[in-house]
Length: 178
Image (cartoon, rainbow, N blue to C red; front, side):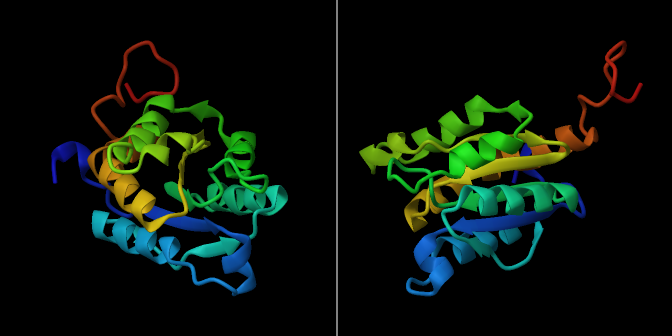
């Protein structure tokens, strides 16, 4: 792993699976556990995936709780498509304070050569307080592709958000260590 992708010590992640069927127990959550394992492999302390239904208020509540708990990275899986109940990006947009459009674009681009419909994902990425929030599709392929993108940048992103990377000391810029 490169220096830029190294996850800072003690970094914590939370996975939120957004799926009516998985929430009801009529369909097994496959993408959440895959994402949990991938984030743990990257070096995050991460518990089991939290499963919520495709309900805006429930998604927002799960994201706000992760932010309030000081989680460094929260990744959702599911609800990013064009279906009438796919509202994860709208819920995420309620809490994101600083969008990171380049990350969302890279996540969409990662799978488009093998799955052209990957470009239809409406997932967002951004920060809320000191938490990086990322939306991934609900498919296991989309999660694998997303983990491939995150592996190269998420450690550096968390370090920047914490103010512990080489960008931390910027003379004359408020909020940075000098």
